Picture: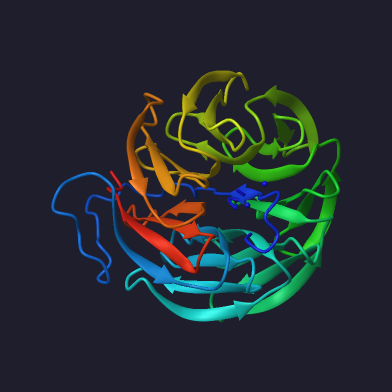
Length: 340
């Protein structure tokens, strides 16, 4: 999530709710497959292996953890680009609402959810047909979106109305509205602890919401202008990109307290986690780079140059490839990285 989910779009640049959520790891992949459209690097370590042309103002990005298909919300174009994870080629372009920002995939139901910041709606897309099957009215200026696959529940951060909409994924009906937030942007779900984390860009805090009661249970002070959030299931922590401070706050998922702060690049905007090895990837919107953080050690191990204005970021569970939206243009950077 995004000042872009994950994201979390380019036409309406503040705030960006960035969603990046990782699905559960069903099995340990023992071999890393490299998409045929890119060449594997000679040396170890994450490197950019190519770019993919998408729509204008690409904001958030999400990957179907089962099929490896990538979905990119193009904020200026009002579309979603569908990318084949094996060839890294765009196979479809879907028209959604105005200024789509956050995007998330339920791999269990093969359904994609897109938060339309300018339309106050969520577009529901069938991953089978690449068509919009429903449009759901939510709060004002929805930005980030996250999914609890265990319960088939969708959570939408509404930046303009200071709420989170809770959607039943089976009926596409809003079943609850969580209030008491402050310019919510990024959103992520920890299905293990049954907690939803929401970044409050206007309050420099993160709200922890119980999925049982749909109420805020804890408010955590983090850095300046927190934009994006991701849950690290490997380390049991929550990573928050603080856009105004150039840092990432690391929160214990047990105590809901900040345990460390990691300095990254200028204007961190999106955050994603490799669900197998716990590596954290952060887009630095002002620096045109991605910071790589060792999950267990919370230190920057590499800095990768990508395109202009990187925002959304997602990791493929199929092969470990990292996808970065470059909001200043019309491209997605492809980063080769080991899944293990």
